[in-house]
Amino acid sequence: DRDEQQQEVPQVTSIHEVMHSVGEGMVRSSHILEYTSSSELSEPAQFSLYGDPRVISIVGHALQSWEIVSRSKNEQLVRVYWKRSHLDSTATLLISTESDRSDSQQGKIELPRIECRNVLRQVGHVGVAKDANIEV
Image (cartoon, rainbow, N blue to C red; front, side, top):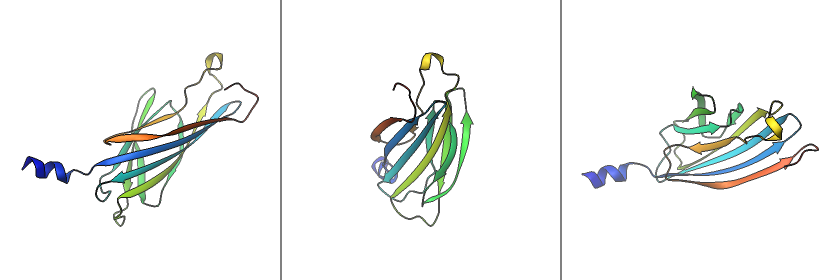
């Protein structure tokens, strides 16, 4: 019985690619989250967004809706709901965020970071570009 229950739970992994663009007073970030499951993606996905950025948009072919479930000083918990018609085992989300860095102390900033919840593994890459005459 226990082996059957373990097999029913989908095994989900995520790939997170992000490009941060640091400007004079703003950090703009473009995140790509790709979820892959051992079965259909039917359960809502959740991720924590750190660094207190504003979520500008979340879009994706399989996306029905999204919501910020909870918010604390440095973490926002985001839940995304998949379309019921999406019967595939993969889905990709494009997430745009902005962070105001005008009140950063000594020029140090925390770049926004995403941590996927309820996944076996999260891998990916981070890129940083500068848009202004600043040191990165």
